[in-house]
Length: 308
Image 1 (cartoon, helix red, strand yellow):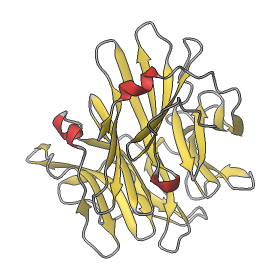
Image 2 (cartoon, one colour; image 1 turned 120 degrees about the vertical axis):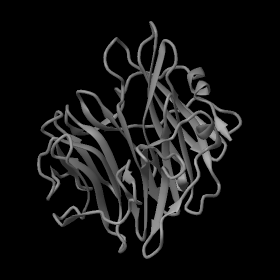
Image 3 (cartoon, one colour; image 1 turned 135 degrees about the vertical axis):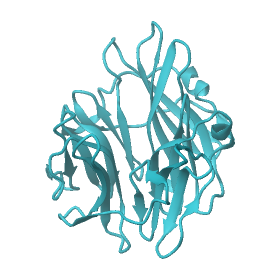
């Protein structure tokens, strides 16, 4: 079942994030991930970026083994095979030199290997949960995009990769690019993007798919799904930033469980930046990046939905 983003726009915009609790004062924070009370985020302007972490006791420090680099386009917190925290990220030292690595947050790190198929490259940073890894691939054949092989994959330790399905509407409307992946327990979530962007999640065996139209850019309107993450009970969370002609910018938080879509619209009070530019979920705790402020915890206040 596909839930339309238009349903989100029917909710009355909420006030700004004044009631939220600031947990990391970092005006250049970008791309945040969270698990077990630990936060990791990208800080710094493009060209001089590094990774920071906040431990459950509130201590903030640079991530060991992750030096300042040109950019860190993607990050994810998961678990290694022993259940310990594992950070995965993409680090680009130059425009043409990028590596996809794991880091145990104690300085030990290595590049991922043997995930890409021949003629394919990783389109997302891998998300690992114990013995399983989920990731996106972009594949080519004879110099052209190979849509049949591109997409979302999961790989269990010691087994061949499995190609998971995309939503039917994503296929119909040409949303083939996988821009984000999150793996939690036995469920995996991803974004399929083009003019229309679909957030979806499913079991590791490709069953029980939940999907929604998270963003659409047409005419005088533009929208961008900033990412998709999984929370308690497999709840699928997405942050979409949208702008319509002559209207203030708005950030839309979408929470999908089965057929139940709950949304919260946060409108920018002026012609400034979006109210939030990234989202992370740690169980039932929601974190947002507020531009020029930092990272806050946010109490989700969705519009009433009588059918949920």
